[in-house]
Amino acid sequence: MKKYDAIVIGAGNGGLFSALSLQKNGKKVLLLEKNRQPGGISTSFKKGRFEFDVNEQMLSNYGNLSHPGELYQLFEKFHLNEKVKTIACHDVFHLHVKDTQENFIFPKGQEAFIEQMEKYVPGSKEAMVTFFGLCEDVREAISHYPKEKPSDMDIFYQTYPNFVELAPYKVIPVLEKIHLPKKAIQILSSFWVFFGSFIEDISFIHFALLVDSYVTYGLEMLEYTSYDLSTLIAHEFLALGGEIRYSSCVDEILTSDQKVTGVKVGNEEFSAPYVVADISPAVVYGKMILKENVPSSSCQLSNERILGAREFRVFLGLNQSLEFAPMVHVIVPTLNQKVLHKNQNSIFPDVLMGVVKNNHDSSSILELGGYFFQDRFDRIVKKENYYALKEELASMMIDLWESVTHLSIKPFIEEIAIATPVTFARYTNHPDGTTYGYLAKGYDNLLPRLFTKDKERKISGLYFCGSFGNFLSGFSATYFSGSEVAKEILEEKE
Ligand SMILES: Cc1cc2nc3c(=O)[nH]c(=O)nc-3n(C[C@H](O)[C@H](O)[C@H](O)COP(=O)(O)OP(=O)(O)OC[C@H]3O[C@@H](n4cnc5c(N)ncnc54)[C@H](O)[C@@H]3O)c2cc1C
Image 1 (cartoon, rainbow, N blue to C red):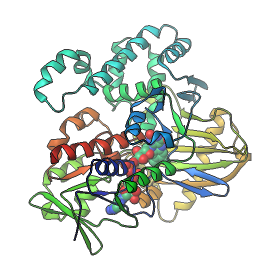
Image 2 (image 1 turned 90 degrees about the horizontal axis):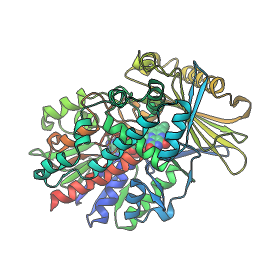
Image 3 (image 1 turned 30 degrees about the horizontal axis):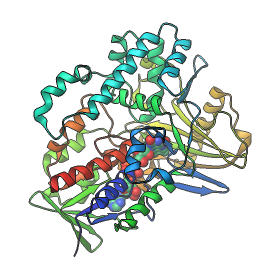
Image 4 (image 1 turned 120 degrees about the vertical axis):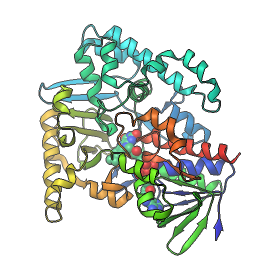
C-alpha cells in the first residue's frame, strides 16, 4: 500500500490549494480527482468558437500589484500572480430593479461608492462612511484573532469592541442601527443573492467582509478561463513533486479508532494520517465511511445543515459585443426585501445574475444564472419533462434579461448551453447538485463555523475544505479554506 503524509479528495479550488500548500511545506501529498481534469466547478467547456467558463471567472478580494487584495497576497506566496492575467471590471455592480425599472451602478473604491450612493439616496453619506468604518474594524479584528493563544482573548475583546458587539447580529439590524436610509439599505442588500444565501440569514460580519473586499478591490475577471487557473495550480503542485490521479473516484475513507488511516479507490488502497475532503460531509459520512465508524454527532450535524443554492445556468455565445462588459448584472423583481424573500425557495427566475464578457473577435459571452433553494427544483423536474423544462426555464431567463436590461440578445445567439442542478450533481457529486456548500443561516454562520471547527472534528485527521469548508463558497473563500486546512494540519503535525 502506497503511503502519503496527506491525501486530498477532489481537485476543486479548495482541494487544489490544500494539496499545493501541504506539498510546498514538504509533505508528500496525493490528490485524487474523479473527473479527468482539475478545477471542479472552476472549469470551462467549448462549443463552436466559444469557450464558456462554468464559473464566471470573477475574482473578488484580488486587486492588483499596486493594491493587492488578500487573494493576491495568498497567490503571491506561491508565485502564481505572474502567470494570472486579469481584466478589471468597469464597476462593482449593476443592479436592475424590475418593478420600478431603476438601475443602480456602483464604481469600485470606498469614496466613489459612497458618493454614488449619496447621488441615488441623498442623506446616506454619513451612515455609509460609518458602514465602511465598521467593515474595516471587522477586517482588522478577524486578522488579529488570537488563534494560537486563546489566553490573549481578553486583550482581543478590549482592542476590538466593535467586532465583539457586532458578532451576533445580522445585516439589516446593523444597517438600521447606523441610520442608513431605507432605500440605501434596500440597494446595498439586494445585490448579493448570488452568494447563495439570503440577506436576512447572513451575519453582519460575513457581509462586511464580502462587501468591503468587493468595493475596495473591485472585481477582476480572468483573461483566460478558470480552467486555466485550475490547471496552473495543478501544474505548480506537480512541479513541487505532488502526485495527482485523475479519473480516480474515492469510494471509501478508511478509519480506525476514530482516526483516518487512508482511502480506497476501487480495489486500491492508499494510506495517510490526514485526509482532506473537498466534498460534502453528507456524502463522506453517508457513503464513504463504514457506518459503524461514523460518529453520530457528525452525522447529525451534516443532516441538520441546509444545502445552499442550486444553480441553473444558461451559457450564451453572441455574435456581437455587448455594452457594459466585463460586468456583473443582478436583476431583482423589487427592492422590497420582504416581498423578495416572502417565499424564499421560489425566487427562480425572478432573481437573475448575468455576467457579460466581450471576446477579441467582436463576439461576446453572456452567462445567466438563476437560483433554486431547498427542494424547489426537485419538485418541478421529472424524468419525462427534463429537456422541455430546461428550454422553458432558459427561455424565461432570456426574456427577463431582455425586458429588464433593454439589452437585446435573441437575434445574436450563436451558441447556447444549459446547466441544471442535475448537471452540477453529475459533475461534482455534491448532494442535489448544490454548488454553494451549506447555507449560512441563523447561528450557523461564518463566525460560529470558524470558531467551532475543531470541536466538530470527531474523526482525527479528517478535514473539509472548499464550499463545504468553514469559509463558505466563492473563489477566494474556497482557496483560503484549502490553505487554512493545510496550515492546521501542519500545526497539528508539529
Ligand atoms: C455557476 C457558478 C458560477 C460561479 N461563479 C463564481 C465567481 O464568479 N466568483 C466566485 O468567487 N465564485 C463563483 N462561484 C463559486 C465558486 O466557483 C465555488 O465556490 C468553488 O469553485 C467551489 O470549489 P470547491 O473547492 O468547493 O470544489 P468543487 O468545484 O465543488 O469541486 C469538488 C471536486 O471534487 C471532486 N469529487 C467529488 N467526489 C469525489 C470523489 N469521491 N473522489 C474524487 N473526487 C471527487 C469533483 O469531481 C470536483 O472536481 C460560482 C459557482 C457556480 C456554480
